[in-house]
Image (tube, rainbow, N blue to C red; front, side, top):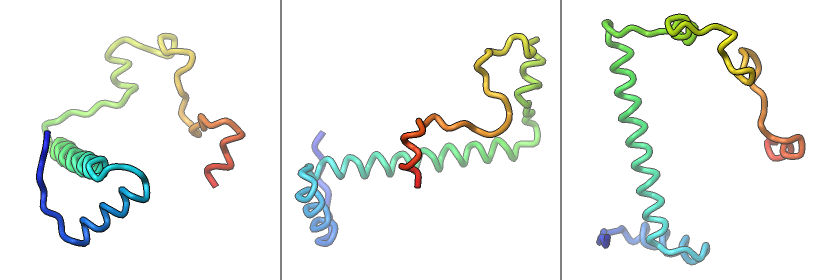
Length: 101
């Protein structure tokens, strides 16, 4: 799809400079900007819906343990690899720990 938009001189200058410095097209950065903007809108919209549901007094919430009990599941039905409560383990190898500093 082709789309024409009007940019301020400053926006045009920044976009052109970025595209030249990174050897990417201006369209690439406009698409990336739109993706990020849409993601933000979706997150805000979905967050708003979640907040409305949490405020609804007629909504019933269950813990994971309650759901497992309702389904007739207990510890023997859980996967041996299921995470136990406690400190989260890192998936990084010891060689990657220098990257987080």
